[in-house]
Image (cartoon, rainbow, N blue to C red):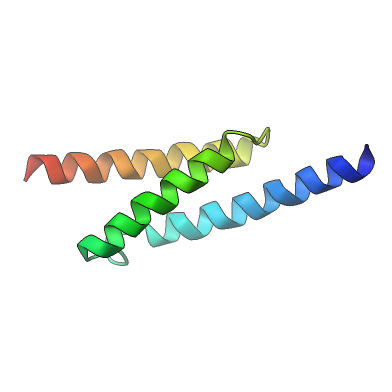
Length: 80
């Protein structure tokens, strides 16, 4: 069981690193074009799917932050 717990912790650490990278990419100065914004939305969706299976609160915090970024971007587009 210790091996499985170690693998789980390692995957959580990888998810945290990935989520932080996607969060950095979500800054408006980085994702400027429609293609970049579409890729960001896909990355957030894929991260959210993986994060649902995690028990790590750091992963869930990043998931919520990224989903909030996506919602803000959608509101911005809808208001134009």
